[in-house]
Length: 468
Image (tube, rainbow, N blue to C red):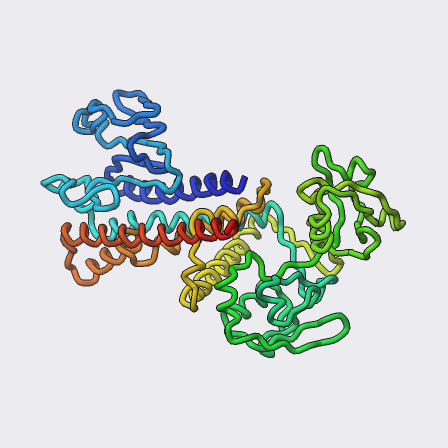
């Protein structure tokens, strides 16, 4: 399911990114020969083009007929775009006439520059065309965040309201002296009551001194100088998560818990007679008892009771736990946003997310940081195993910001490289030659492919290391 979610998310982002280029190209009367979602190496799943006053379609086609070539069409049809769906879900492209990019080189251009080509347009128009994809991705992310807030609102759980504390990663956090249930109260002497802010300070501000609440006492922890390096080495999915009570929300089909008599609203507090009020501890114990029966203690309408329940071979009961934090934590609060209120809140959230992402890139320059590079496997792992619309849109907004930022970096071959060369032309009044742009494009594509091989190679190595 997470791979399906990733492909759908990337499809939306690629489609909107390329539509940004297409919109400005059409605005400035520049021909767009092909618009593709996914790459079409050797053949296309679908091709569509309008000419002779009707739409024409080709399915699973390897070679476009000569009759579809713009040179063989009526003058009024020569500006029409061929719309395509490729079969390799790793991106897409917008083939703009007269532009040196991943689809063509200098020798592929018309010998005589044409007025409908990209290269003959004023520099400011070319800047708009090439920036269109980044602009649309950035705006899309902000709109998605706004609509998430409008649809679901936002839950806020101050760290001081974390009744059961936090669950910490074993390889990194527990080795630094944290214990399950600790609550961070200050980092480097600065009081903090927000978990995401605490994590940001730990990772990005070289924090060494951490004050935690442990039960009824307050302790001072000193992080090792290699703390960030450990994070880079172990790459934990979560350094710390909120410890929650286990309150049953609903059941999946064939749930052993439902068959045993448990009901929605029951609050599980023990397993096999051992007090265990926290969700994370209960699920870990159930995994250890996969394929067996356990005695589940629970509260129902304020009354303590127990039932014997069979655990399936995957260590699950077939239940969905309550996830509404305002229900689970008395000190939490849920904020609802009106339609117009959601836009400034969404812009603020998107900007904060982008700043945090850009700041986190410095982790790549830590010892072993290159191992943190991840490809499509790493992106897929971000999505939950079962479909959740809120998680899907949250991650799509994040990927939109990442795509926008990565494309604005001045690497030849990406949008940022074209933007840099166009700005140079505007400032110096000197346009780079087509030969130079071809060399720059080739270098950029080589660099991009190398990064993709490295990132996806890291994914493959991490997957194989599970078995050896």
